[in-house]
Length: 435
Image (cartoon, rainbow, N blue to C red):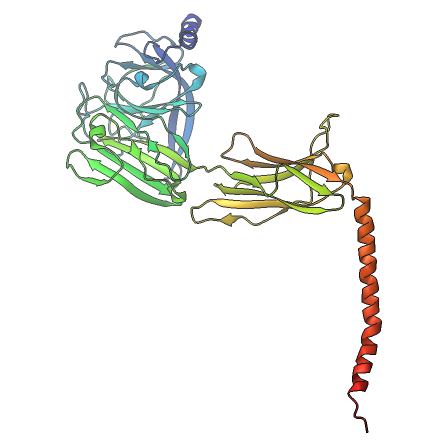
């Protein structure tokens, strides 16, 4: 058993070193079977417990021996649908999450139209998920048990699976997306990827797209191959014929944000993938001053940092001061006198915010650099906008002229205060009649 596991790990490592672009040559993938144990309480309500069991996908032919005999093996045999060809890039074990679950047809009792299907087939889903979010693949595995299970195979009557059992399966259908999460700006036209593959010419095929947003569900597109009916747009019918159900959205706006669901139905199978669309618009940052400010000592200047046009709302703005020279290992000092405006909401759904402070010119601060730092979820690194402060001393001649000017003004004011009453008295005397 140890030798077999080492061989599998070696295959993965070799794929990474040699840059293999798919896993079509890898015969085994480790998985986790999430098994359901359903019990009914005294009130008749179903209570489900989930048991995680070691399992694996093994690709080969009927009758092959298990590569890992200590795990539950799902032997995936000859089918026109091969999930491995949809795995792109050099993928190794730690980059894949593989999960297998039982699948209930929800009361639909019909034979799968594919080759070799039986009335008593039972179903599993296998989901391969890239840890960095590059893709998600959900495959439907059909297993024909040697002994039919009485009644319908669902959570009330799941057939037991032994710890080291091997189940021979065939991939009947898969649904695949390369865009499980999408971040896009405003006024863009993104394409949400959704692809499917079926092991036969599926006449009874239905493709739908839905948008789930704030508790509301909207159907964006629907097409039935059997009836030929079509509603909505954004998906090419020619693409559906090739297994491509990707949706092209109109120009994005704030209301475009939400969860888009691609649904592919071939009875009795119903596959779907959720794609989260996030609107991200980075801020435009500017200052109301030039890169160098020259002030006279004691002079004041209002400095404003403006962040405009960002979405969503979670922006952070801070002002810092770096001492002149920037040496000595001193860290920038965060200013605690900064005031903020309220968030301004624009018609396009974006926001703006201002952070400002009153700069008091001091010779001690001359040569210091001030910078505004803006952080936002759309930015990999914060944006910095800065200026350098130059402070000059007050000119002594200017002080002298200022002194004489103020003195002259004071003398003139005092003179007026004395003369105005006298002028008023003289004017009143002149108005008296001569008799």
